[in-house]
Amino acid sequence: MREYCFGVDVGGTTVKIGLIRTNGEIVEKWEIPSDTSNNGENILSDICASLDEKMEQWNMTPNDIEGVGIGLPGPVLSNGTVLNCVNLGWGTFNVSEKLSQLFHGVPVKADNDANVAALGEDWLGAGKEFDSIVMLTLGTGVGGGVVINNRIVQGFNGGAGEVGHITLNEEETEECGCGRKGCLEQYCSATGVVRLAKRYMEAHGEPTKMRDMNPLACRDVFNLAKEGDAAAIEVVKQMAEYMGKGLGIIASVVNPQAFVIGGGVSKAGQYLIDNIEGYYRDNCFAPCSNAEVRLAELGNDAGIIGAAALVTRSEETVILD
Image (cartoon, rainbow, N blue to C red):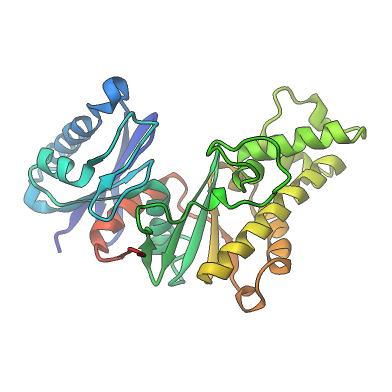
């Protein structure tokens, strides 16, 4: 195996890129803008131009590169075909083939960005002690990635791991972004926590500093809860109960050794984990109750490290059909 590879994490605003040794050591990392004009037609060529520039700086040739791994914000088939990336303006095409053609024929592996982040945490982050983990990314939405026996579970058409859309509340009247109602994402994302807080304040007249926050943010809810604000504490409990029930459902299907919690909401730290754990133990099948719940460790580097892992651990994808 060659010494170097590139890890690429494509988002709707920026593309994170890392020059990474195949043992996982980050040599250098940087970002370029995601040019989503004209349905994102320039994104891959911009990535290639950036990789070429970096190789020139490091006096490298394509023969020094084991491959390029790339994480994408949409469903991706095992052959590198992306089915739809709304945030980028992309339809269906084979990203692995296209990027390889543009970048000197260097091998390219592609997968969903949440899967890639999970693989990164499994390789070098909070899941490195385990063979099987489920990662949940709690941000504007809720993403997920399933790694079993150190291998990504993609599913039949790239849809495995979409844990944010487990139905938890059949009485919900508001629609989730997916078009359904009562999804885990509606309660456990950053926007979901704010939704719970607003509903709580509408239903209860007690004083709370949350009423003084305009606009109210998820971090405000957790900070106030840590300070002892009774209403904020109740909102956190509601969110944690939804999370615990969601993790219990997931555990009954894949029985992981650990859950890894990342994304912006995870900045609440161990306080978040402590609240979730009890509800998880109460809502899971008993033989699955020993799974650990941990905070993600790699932060914004999870994507580029996991993308590199697609190259260095190239056989580690599972297709369920």
